[in-house]
Image (cartoon, rainbow, N blue to C red; front, side, top):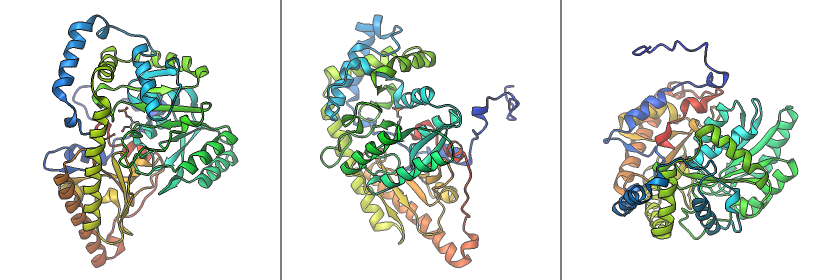
Length: 436
Ligand SMILES: Cc1ncc(COP(=O)(O)O)c(C=O)c1O
C-alpha cells in the first residue's frame, strides 16, 4: 500500500479507532514548527536550561559503567531505586509516607493515564473531567470508548456545585461515572489552581458519590509564588490515584512518569503495563535515578520556576498592553499555560490559518473539550519561547485579532466564522505529541 493516500483499511479498523480523524489543525501545526513562526502552541519545557554537559556525562557513564543493567530489560513495576526516589519527590509535594511498593513507574504521565483508563473504563462509561482538560487524556478516554462529561471551572478551579450537578446528571442518564480526572494544580490548559477549600469539597463530593479520583499533577512543583496547595492525594489515601512525571521538572525526552495507587490495585496496574510495554525503559529510569541522586535537581526546579515566572510576567504584560478590548485571560501562579477568552464573535479555530500566515501559533480551545466547545478560547504557552519572542508573538496575535474584529465591524457577524459543536472533536483537534 506504500504511496497510497486512500485509506483501504476503514472496514477493518476497531470501533475505538472510528472516531479518530486527522484535522486541518494538525496540518497547520506542521507549519507552526517553522522557525519564523512564534509558537505559543507547544507544551515543551525549556530544556536548554538544563546543565546539558553534565547530563551528557552522566548518561555516558550510565552506559559505560552500568550498562549491564541500564541496557537490559527490567521489571514491570520499575526499579526499586527509582521508586524510592519518587517517594522522596512526592514527599516534597506534601505526599508523605508513600511506599515504593505502591508506585508504578510508567512511560510518562501519558501511559499512567492510559493504564488507569484500561483498568477502569468499559465502553460507554463516563469520565468526569474539567472543561477544558488535557488533550492527551481526552485522547486516551476516547480510545477507551468512554464519554467525557466536562465540569466547568472558574478562576478557583473546578466548581464543586457543578461537579455535584454533573454526577447527578450522569446518574439520571443511566450511565456510570467511574472517575473524576482532574489536574488541580496549575491546570493544563487553563492555568488555574483549585483552592484549598475546594479541594476538601471536591474530595467529599467524590467520596459521597463513590467516584474515584485520578489526580494528574505534572506541574505542582512549578510554582511561582510560594508552594502549591497540597495535592488531593496528600489529603486522602483511598480512592485517589496520583499521577505525575519527570517531563516538566527534568526532561520529557526520557518519558518517565509514575502512578501512586492504592495497594490493592497496584498489581493489576503492573500487569496492564507489562501487557503494554513489558517494562519502562531501564536506561531512562537509570538516568532519572542518577539525576536525582547525583545532580542538584532541586536547584534545577528552582531555575525552571524562575525562568517560567519571568516568561509568564512577560506574556501577561504583553497581553495587557496589546490585546483588543473584550479579551480576558487567566493569571497562572505556576505551570506553563495561560487560557485566553476572545472578544465576542471571534473563533480561535477559524482564525488559526490567519494567525499562522501572520507567523504566530496557539492551540484553539476546541482541542481541550470532548464536545467541540471552546471556539472562543485559546491556550498560550509561555515556557518555551524567549521573552522577546513571547512579546512578538502576542503583538502578531493581537494584530490578527484586530483584523478579525475590523472585518466583523465592516461585514457584520455573517462574515465571521460560525460556531459549531460536534462530538468527538478532541481527537480531531488534538495537536500531536510535541504540543502536549
Ligand atoms: C496534564 C498533563 N498530564 C500528563 C501529561 C503527559 O506528560 P508526559 O507523558 O510527558 O509525562 C501532560 C503533558 O503535557 C500534561 O500536561
